[in-house]
Every structure is written in structure tokens, then in C-alpha cells.
Image 1 (cartoon, rainbow, N blue to C red):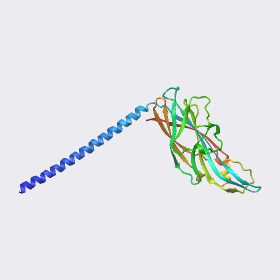
Image 2 (tube, helix red, strand yellow):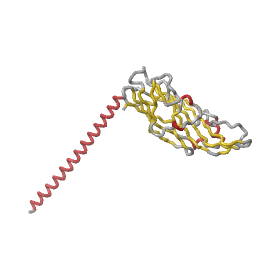
Image 3 (tube, rainbow, N blue to C red):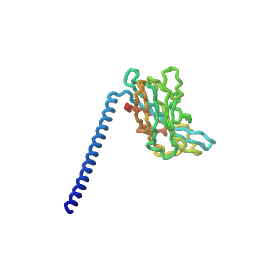
Image 4 (cartoon, rainbow, N blue to C red):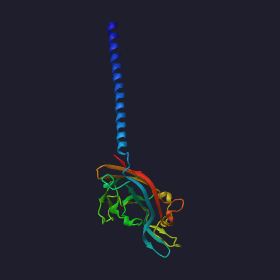
Length: 265
């Protein structure tokens, strides 16, 4: 009877050990397969991106402010909707002659994020016509909420007041970051100096620049004329001042040499 019980116990232990061994073997095999798949994905990605087809090599930023004049008198001005705006021009380079690989078939913007939100105001991103670059007008129909598609053309007479890009990359992507309602129904009592509707309004309205500092990011997606897909993520620190100047002096213009590479996927 004891011998029979010992055999049963031995059988149970053997089965348990076999299950443990099989489970460990499964884990090792699964780890190997995942590692191999990851290596293949990395290798495939690297092979697709041995050469750079598109990259952003220059960004121009223009920052200022504006508002609507609600009422005025000899002693004060009352404004509404004080807003700060930064116009953004993104210059995409195709690193060579125009061919099927390095010309546009479609371009879109999505995945907009306010990585640093201003503590006051209502920030949004808009398409901005290159004809209105560095001007303070806001066209609400051009707000970018989620995905925004550009029209691609080769027509020399294209209307650039609309979101149009030449297929040979001849014109930049132009956008505008606008932070509205920083101050509303605000009365300026200091009329000792003339009121100018630019960045100096921020100082006139006692706006701390730290309260409107912001950082925005978004993805730019390209499909070329070979139907290959590319993407890059752009990060913009909204410029309000630097070592030499401040938006409160009226406006601030910056040119940045950058290297945002579009990765083929």
C-alpha cells in the first residue's frame, strides 16, 4: 500500500515538473519570438529610412498680440478679447530633384497637443494663409481641431488664401497659434502713451508673460507620389522673449534652423 502511494506521489511530482518545464520552455520561446519580431521591425524601419527624403530645415516664427477696442474716451480705453498669436512657417526640404519619390501627393496635420498650456486664455491652432502671415486676423473656419488636410496642386495660379501646398514643396506650411480671451472687458487707464494694437498691449494690460507661455506639438503626415507614407512630430515653444527682445516691444520674429526628419513607415 505504501509502495502504491509512493508511486502516485512520484507520478504527481513528475507531472508537475513536466508542466513547469513546458511552461518555462513556452516563456523562453515566446521571448525569443518577440525579440525576433522586434528585431525584424527595427531592421525593416532602418532599411526604409536609409536615405532622408523629406525634412524640415527652417522654421520662421512671428509673435505679437491684438484686441478689439470696445470703448474709448479721453482718459481710458476698454478692450475685449486680448489675444496673443504666433504665426508659424514650416519649410519642408526634399533634398534633391523633383521626382515621384520626393513630391507631395497628400499632406495632413493631426495629433495636436498643448504640451505646456498657458494658465490664462484659450489656445487653438489655425491654418494661416501665407498672404496674411504676420497679420493679426483670425478666421475661425481655419481652426484645426483634429485632422487637417491640405490641397496639393501644381497650378501656378493656385489661391494661397486656402490651405494649398505645391506638390514640389515651393511654399511652406503656414499655421497660427492663437491664445484668445487673455483679457476681456479690460480698461486701460494709462493713456500717457498712445495705444498700439500689438504685443505692447500685453504690458498695458498687466499680463505676465509666464502666464501665457506655451508649447505645442503636432504630427505632419506626407504621402508621396509612390504612395509611400512619412511622418514627423514638430515641437514649437511659443516665443515671447529672448535675450535681445520681447513681444511687449511690439512683436518678436525668430528664424530657427532645425532638422525634423520625416520617417518612412
